[in-house]
Amino acid sequence: MAKIQLEGLHKSYDGVKILNNISLTVEEGEFMALLGTSGSGKTTILHAIAGTNELDDGIIKINNQEITNIPVNKRHVVLVDQNLLLFPHMTVKANIGFGLRMQKVERSLIKKKAEELIDLLALKGHENKYPHQLSGGQMQRVAIARALATEPYVLLLDEPFSKLDISLRNSMQKLVSNLQKKLGMTTILVTHDKDEALSMADRVAILSHGKIIQVGEPYDVYEHPKSIVVSRYFGDRNYFDGSMLDGKFTCSHGVFLVDSSKEGLLTMIIRPEEITISLNRKGVLVTIESTFYKGDVYTYVGKKNNNDIFFYGREQERYKVGDEIWLNIPFKQGVLVERSKHEKNI
Amino acid sequence: MKLLKKSYVYFAIGIILFFLLTMILWSLINQWPWPNLWPKQFDLRGLKFAFGSMKSYRILLSSIGLSGFVTVLTLLICYPAARALAFYDFKGKKLISFLFLLPLIVPMITVVLGIHINFIKLGLANNITGVVLVHLLPGIPYGVRLMETSFRQIGQSIELQAQVLGAKRWQVFWYITLPLLFPGIIMAGTMIYIISFSQYFITFLIGGGKVMTFSLFIFPFIESGDRTLASALSLLFISSIYLVLVFSNLLVSYYSKNVNSN
Image (cartoon, rainbow over all chains, first blue to last red; front, side, top):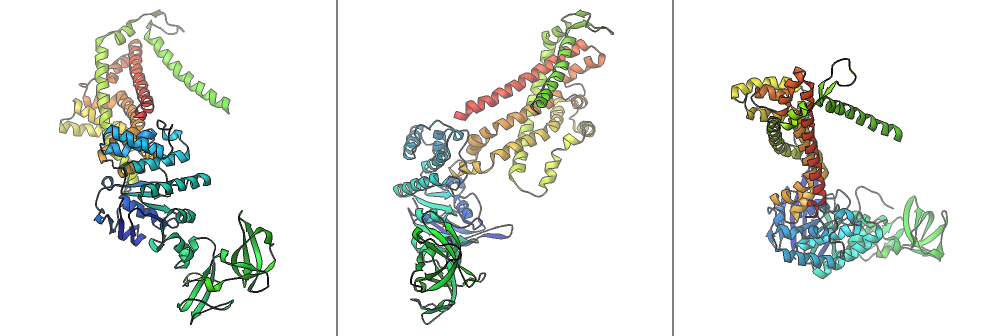
């Protein structure tokens, strides 16, 4: 268990900046998720911490001690790769015990530790099997057991569940989440799956183009994104361009009183689940352009002045494409962010 | 399609068997004058000479020793080259990769004639050191290519994973790289061995007849037309190579069964 600090990490490949001044502190026992699209630099951060790639600049500290120049095998940081990388020529037991064996730990202790982890990760009966004889979920658990066996300061997970089918993924997420809490192990998870990040982590750091653009608790980053880029990670949302002056937000749908002291040209973000369908013909009139059935809700896309508005509906209020309905859009509760330079919104 | 495939296989086996059986037949003959369709007289002279005399075994053993040594040396040379070609990017990689194939493209005779002059100057002609050095050449393309493919199959990330788990460099090599590369090494080694074992001309030229290998031993009999002795010795030659193949197959299957279980 350890506290981990990243200070001003920089890394370029072929002139392209992969990491641009990354600074982040993960507290002892904390579960941090790095959320970002592919190419955002999240995996590079993990490899920098593990020592499997070199940084151009920056300092990494574990428990206030710099580890930037410590070789990979002495960092006590274990990475679980998305490809798992189990040793194909070793049994489950040998795989789990590998790290301890390399440290020349006594055989009886290795055996004890391996048995403990085999129990903990429900691998009983598979100890003597080879990786190719295991199912996807079992291989996953072996990879995690192997990582935990060395009792690392920090556990790094690089999209470990991305190759599992959805039900297995959910159960593995729960397992790892519980295990992390039980062992109190400082953990950094890299993922592009927002649900995974939100449900598992204590805090989420959102990355874009090699920069951390927001760090916060899951609720915070979901409900109060600081920019449109962050907001877009969390699915279809509505973005209204407008301007703020004296606590009033003016957009193409009218002027609204808002509890904010911000001023200037801004964008208001309103999540689809905040919009309700108005039965008393008040609010904003839209024409339904398309509908998507998602099991728990219907997602509608309404058209207004050639712009899309996303909202949800329950089954008893089913609407068809072409229907005109009124929507209550709670402009007073929206989140105000800087306007994006690249895109125009409603 | 299946029938066609099968008939190809039978055709290939047929051709091999035809020549092998002819050789076996020749090794058992005393006289087979033209135009007889079947040999006139059989005897065991050839087999006795090849399989029953100490001389042929002695030469066979020294030849096995030479080729075995050459194989180990070639593998040691090819290992870092194959690893570099599989894992690292560097300037001129394509050119170097191509250069490794040159011994296959440029006829050995032309190269070795040039080498010979220099070996004389360096005092490497007419002795075993020179022969070992020149035997390294034809095996290198196979060694590099076969091991490079094995390295690519293993990938570098599994070595990194071992390091992340706390393994030192030699431990990574010993516990991960070597066992995973083992089948590839055996495959490459077998190939290199057979190539070295079969060299005639370069051994003759550089060794100056002073370094005796089995190929060199057989050649005069073929040249002088004593087909019986030549065939009998060739049988011994083939048997020894066959044993090497069996041994290497055994090693690989032993590996996948036992070394695996650690």
